[in-house]
Amino acid sequence: MQRPVNITCVIDEDHPVDACLGDWVLVHVGFAMSRIDAQEAEKTLALLAELGEMQQELDAMQSNGGQG
Image 1 (spheres, rainbow, N blue to C red):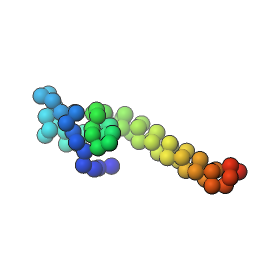
Image 2: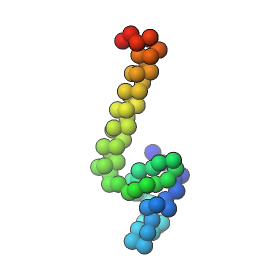
Image 3: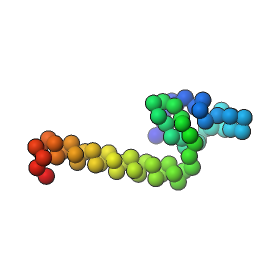
Image 4: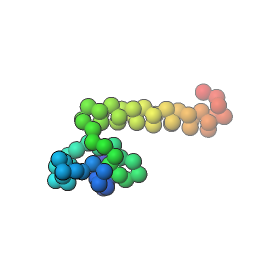
């Protein structure tokens, strides 16, 4: 997923702005909090997808009055 993100927290002398293009980052409220490698990004995306599916199931259970 691509979106505008403030990268102030992940740049420094060893990793300037120009070097950030293509980096995977963990984002919270529009700020890149840390750089991660592609493998960690894949694991995080899979976990978020699983959590989304779980939330859909919980929502469906609530709309059925708790009856599966």
